[in-house]
Image (cartoon, rainbow, N blue to C red):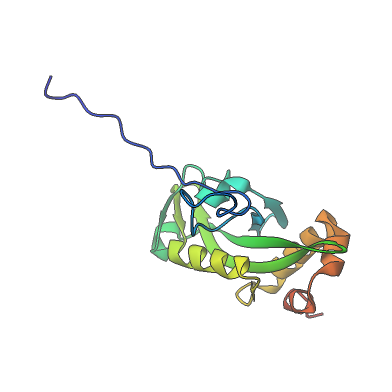
Length: 173
């Protein structure tokens, strides 16, 4: 049977919760914990933001069925989106938005093509996890959508968050 094909092997990504070095010195040493990072997708045209956990592995509902390239022309005429990596940390008073970084995406559903730079997404997720705020690439409308989403998600978390975040998402009017 010369035409038999082996099933494609799936390579999984392991997310290790809590402290990977807690209690043993084997598997997972040096791994990053992604426990407090959530991907929020901002749909600029629809004016909505939502948590899409599938985006952790580029498998969100928004990204499903789309072939992404690094060539903007492939997705010409598509809808603009932002993937925002939101890191949450804990203060004695409660949780707060500790880090945040936005990444550009364009998706053309008709062509089933999208534009994103995976390396930029990974680097910005890392910055968010390191408690940095990188939101300078957001347009005013997207800042408004994200700010309103964060406030409505949990007003106390917003209040406990650093002034740097509030300034980064401040309305220009």
